[in-house]
Length: 310
Image (cartoon, rainbow, N blue to C red; front, side):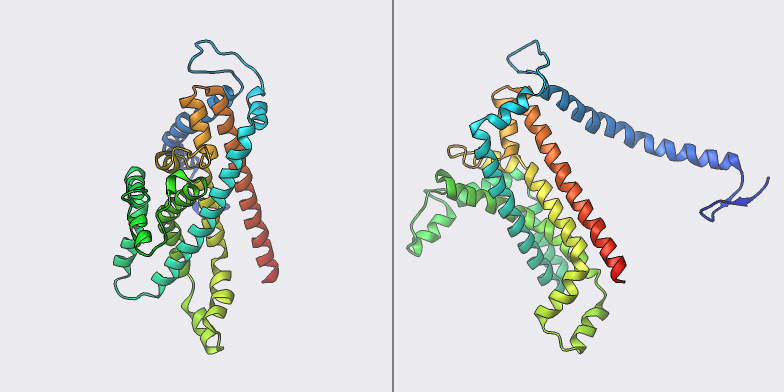
């Protein structure tokens, strides 16, 4: 048997071995490809098909209606309120969750003893189920016997109706998501912080850099891709979220906390408009693609700049 080296430099011992390796790779990939096809690609294509029909839970026979569902969505006066709610909700969750997660990560990174215990305590909200978290927050924000109103009343700030006021309900819904999602950001940021070489911090101290200058000129540049990845993950997760808001406020009061994911569910399963709800789902999918494309383009541009600078 003739031995030769391939382009990768690995020793190849003949065509039979190469074919055997290829068959083994294909056999490993087939189960994953099957599940992706059945549980990801097929539902996505079927949703696009439904969005082009007048499918309804109350109508046994469906027919194609083209892009009418999309036109109805963008012409609907309620859509503007839904998009406004979504923008407010996503924007503030991104900002607060990112800042809070980074703060937790910086604090944990400075702790030397019991870091694992502190990290586990801070990570608890993330592992709690959505329904349990919502139940706890409903008790905290209850108008009559809620924990928050109890202490607000004790210091003379009154007892506001959190979940009955449009603005306060949005504040409470944002707070719930930030509380539950900040630990996820903390883990990502902490991993990034611990990958920074200690020599860089020691060199900055030798140069007399202040803590803020160390953070700005050492930590942030070394963490920029981690921060960007965290930012995009928070954005996509928050934009697609449904269960927390649905269980906490149900979109109320007066639809002032109804975000686009909740609107899709209500149209498809509460009102039975499967075609219209699928059209909203496709709109969300396209927006997610746009966000991801912007992220990938930004990453590629920054890598080119880094290569040119070096």
